[in-house]
Each structure stands twice: as C-alpha cells, then as structure tokens.
Image (cartoon, rainbow, N blue to C red; front, side, top):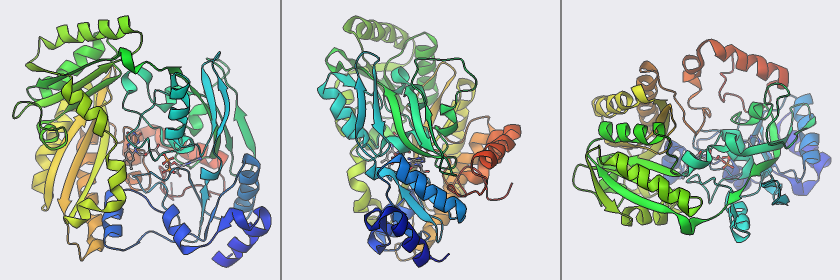
Length: 477
Ligand SMILES: Cc1cc2nc3c(=O)[nH]c(=O)nc-3n(C[C@H](O)[C@H](O)[C@H](O)COP(=O)(O)OP(=O)(O)OC[C@H]3O[C@@H](n4cnc5c(N)ncnc54)[C@H](O)[C@@H]3O)c2cc1C
C-alpha cells in the first residue's frame, strides 16, 4: 500500500479528523530531540524519514481498530505521546504511520483512599502534577521534561524524575495499566498494591519504548505533597571520586533524601551559578516528607558529610537549581547551540558503586583525545541507589553550520566513547532515556545471554514486527 492508500483507508476506518497527512503535522510529530537532529533542524533540514500520516485515536477502541488494520497490512507503526524523546524513539519509519496518543488525555479516576490516580496515556505530566498539587498530592515524578512528557511516554521509556531517590522511577509508581496489542486486543492489568500471581505483566510494557504494545491508560501512585517541610542543603565537594564516595555513604547508610545530585566542577561553574569554590563539585540535597523525617535525614546526612572534604554552601544553590531545573525545555526549539555552531546533548549510564568513578574518569579523559571538535565533556550523578548510581554526561562539540549532514557522525562518535567505556567497565549503557534507535547496536553487549529473550517476547506479541522497528532490537536477530 502506498502512502495515499494508507491514509485513505485510515480515514474510512476512523474518520477524517483522526488522520492527518498534512506535511507540517507529520514533521511536527516526527521531531525527536536527539542532539544531532536539533542541529540539523537549526539549519532548516529535516533528515528524518517521512511517515505516511499521523493517526490520533481518542480511545483504546479506536487505537485497536487502527492496529488491526496496521497488523493485517504489515504497516510500520511508531507510537508517540509527548514527543520529548531524545533517542530517535519517535522518529517514524519511511512510509509507516505515527500513532499519536496525545488526543487520549484526561484523568479517569482520582482515588484518595487507595492513593492512586488513573490517567489516559496522552495526559501531560505537568497537568497531572498540577491537578494533584491543588488537592494536596503529588506524583513524586519530576523528569526534567515535565513540561513536555505525557503519561504513555513516561511508562514506555522507563522514565525517572529528579526526586527519584525517595519516590523511585516510573516502574515503582505504576499500579496498573491498559494497552493495545499489535493485533488490536485491548488488555488491562488491574490495580493492586502488590500481588503474587505470576510474573509482573506491567513490566512488559514499562520500558518497551513502543515495541510491544500501545499504552492507553495508567494508574499511578500518589503521595502527600508537603514542599514546606523540606530540608535543603548544598555542599561544595572536593573531587568527583570523593563526592561519589559520599553519595554511597548516604544511601548505604539508610538515608533517603528525595534529591541527591553531584555535579562535577565543569557543570558547577557552567550550569549552577558558580556557587562553589573553584574546582569543587556541588552536591545538592533535598529531603521531604513529614517534617520530623525530613529533619532527621538532614541531620544524618550532615554528620556523614563531615567525613568528606566538603564546604557547607547553605540553601542558596538548591533554590537556584529548583528554579532553573527545567529551563532547557523552553530553549530546545530556539536552536541556541546551533547558532553557536555546536551540537550539545546528554547521555546517561549507570554502574555499581565499585565502577562508577572509573567510568566517569575514563570517559572524560578519553573524549578529548578521540573527538577532535569537542567543546566540553562533563557530568553529574542524579539518581542514587544502595547498589550504585548514574552518570549523566553533558557534552558539546563544534560542527559546520553549513554542513548539518555531518552532525550525526560527530554525535555518534561521542556516544560510542561513552558506550564503549561503560560496557568495558561493567556499567549499563542507558539509565533512563532508553535505547531508542540510536543505542540499539550496543544492546546485544548490554543484555548478553538474555538478549534473545527479548526477541522471543517480541515475536509472541508482535509477530509481524509492526511496532517501532529498530528500537531496542535490531531488525534482524
Ligand atoms: C529536555 C529534556 C529533558 C529530559 N529529562 C528527562 C528526565 O529527567 N528523565 C527521563 O526519564 N527522561 C527525560 N527526558 C526524555 C523524555 O522526556 C522521556 O523519555 C519521556 O518519558 C518521554 O515521554 P513522552 O511522552 O514525551 O514520549 P514520546 O517522546 O512521545 O515517546 C518516547 C518513546 O515512548 C514510546 N511511546 C510513546 N507513547 C507511547 C504509548 N502510548 N505506548 C507505547 N509506547 C509509547 C515512543 O515510541 C518512543 O519510543 C528528557 C527529554 C528532554 C527533551
């Protein structure tokens, strides 16, 4: 079927208002925020593959009808909701269809007794959070993309928020969900505080990045919202290795501040108001919950930090970070870095405590040797666990503004160094952005002997391979 036939058939099936082959709508829905695509778009170029059309179901039943049609005709489908992907996850397949869940929005059920909220997949996280805050609750989920991301995408990418050390990632917050399978079957996984009835089916969809089903609704935990009881403090810390050791002691010592962020000296100077002594890292800490709990965590953490080379910087850097933490979302489409002739982005990995400092040092030392046009390489840890933490590398490289087609190669060279050093030292190559289509080539090494299982699950749920080709799994086994 060619693009015109696909569009015409879908319009017959779902109605004209649910299907668009308008060039502008297709381009807008194909936008991915991976660094090299932003650079290309800054130069006025759209090198992304071209979809036949965008389909916007209003319900699981409409999504089911669309998927039955795609499956019967083996048409490629790329699900999308908020469109804040940074991994080529929402980039279409040439001649395929974008299944846009953003028209399925709104809150279905708000349950204060059982402490959960059910929202449709296209509900913007910011809307959901505001809705809850007005009623004295929070999702506890604050990714930097809060102003952009929607519920379906958060689940599909295994998202994590800035307050994760207390609330966990989205995988800890999903109580139940609804999804539509490739053959159009609608399945519902019921809400329960915990159950032991076989493998946890929610996890098939959480982190599946649109490769196994189309998520249409989710029930998320809610928490009492009490920002006024927060304990907040920043410290200057001498050296990343020392700082990472301090983070380990905080989490291993049994303390659960909501926010634990350690920025290296480059980021401290560049992004955080330069509020620490020269050459120091900045450590940002927030504890929240009942005031006695928040205060006790603060006290315990203060004691621990006396054993490391730290300087107390008070609350000011924390307030600075809180105020500016999501600013970047509003600047992405303004091409600030392209105008400077630079490709800029981030790349997150994770590792056990025993390996994380080695990875940070290996990447930051090797990168300038291997990437000729490198402008900066820095990083921070923002999500800590008893077993280890993440490093969120931030990087920039210069590129020729008149040759945007060269940006991808420079970009992928940077990613290659991060992936190689992480894998060589026993880390994991994606902490929360997912594989998308750009990290797939490193997935066999990441998963090792369990990788084949992902193909088996894919074949069982999507035998025609219509869902998000090239994401997590290479086209051919
Ligand atoms: C400035 C910025 C900051 C960011 N900060 C964070 C952060 O702090 N933490 C974090 O985890 N991520 C972050 N991200 C990445 C991104 O915002 C997250 O991955 C987010 O969860 C994506 O949600 P979305 O609704 O925008 O999904 P989309 O971009 O629409 O889709 C993302 C992926 O999920 C799939 N998908 C989307 N909807 C569905 C659905 N209904 N069913 C099945 N599959 C679906 C898509 O196919 C794609 O593979 C950031 C991105 C940007 C641009």
